[in-house]
Length: 386
Image (cartoon, rainbow, N blue to C red):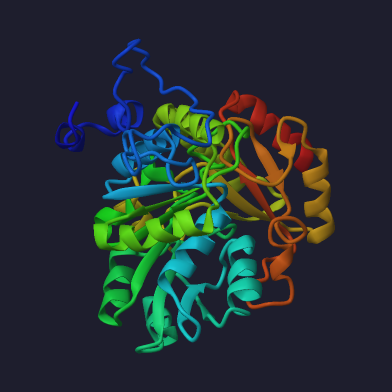
């Protein structure tokens, strides 16, 4: 199929077929792992297929990047060794010392650490603002200095929802770009570029890879001019995805749609259970009508995802005990795999933001709901809470 034909295809078709045509020699329907560092040239400067060195380009990575661009409806994608490598390369591509970022006041701890401890030393300043309050985001923008408005939606781990279209207008009116971390939603549930975002960020370790067997990241851009700037730094900095990692991520992407539907089904059942449990003080899930961002999420997401957060009535010690008692839910960091995970953000993924404006509640538990039998998951949580 041509790129034009793919643009009219459904998500599942693009996820399975975009980025790679069956091998013309063998007919192989899956791209091979091109485990090579260099390529024979047809004369000096005569690059066969544009490949010369695998930091600059690798056919397996090219296949993944083509598929990611197709499912996010972007012009071009770039695959990285990790989500943080993608974020660092993006910032160094687009910002210079003295520039400013507006970021979520409940951002992923790793993103906050990168911007606050690494990029700030380089001279990039930042201000936090709640993603669900456009007025406060607008107030945090410094005209002429703010170059990026950084949005997570839903956020990690408080699952706040930002209006992507509204944030895009705010950013563009101020001469800034809108970056959306789409990791929690995945490309199946949300396509920020179609709503006005300029760049999408993914930790492909999570839902895109989906099997907890690979670490990776990606950037997808809406315009080719921006792609050229990122492409230079992608090669110059060199934090690229290796061919085996790219192959595993591409394999995961092919089943993203069916996995996400099951993640959402299971999450909805768990939210229903937690909402009626006396030990639970608050359930945080965009699918709940009581969630302040429910209408926005309903408008810009296909479904509400597989991430659920909740707070226990008895405080931090009780939250830690719940995390220790589950058996089907594995105590561990990360998210988005086929297996269910439970964690205590304050002590684990978000320990780096303790004592800052981004500190999370001590009684908060975050669930990454997997695709196991939902009856087993509910029973596991019931035992842990009781």
